[in-house]
Amino acid sequence: STVCSHDSIIVGLVEQGFLAEGMEWLSNMLESRRRPRQETFERLIHCLSEADKWGDALFVLGSMLKMGYTLNECICLSVVGKLCNDNPSGVEKCIEDVLRTANAS
Image 1 (tube, rainbow, N blue to C red):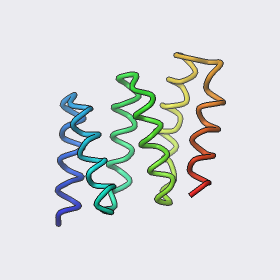
Image 2: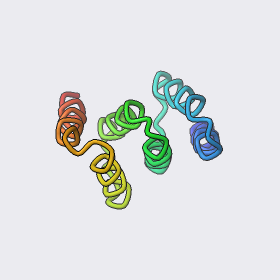
Image 3: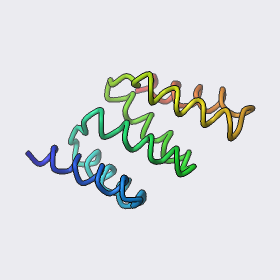
């Protein structure tokens, strides 16, 4: 199906380091009301956080939560751990912002 091929393209792009292109494919998918798989969101979040693209990673996380997915514990621990290492004082605010955004929809 088209959704599966979009998921595969997004994951392939971000795993090869083409983060902006993966985000563009995700945005197009969301705009056309297609529902990405949870694994696609999680792979994006992981790759974006590894590349310190926190704005994009938090956008993806918020989109994932808005769709009703829950965050896999392993990805959650990875993201929180990296946030704590990079910016210990800003972690709580970032998480609160994401949760507030997700709960508003």
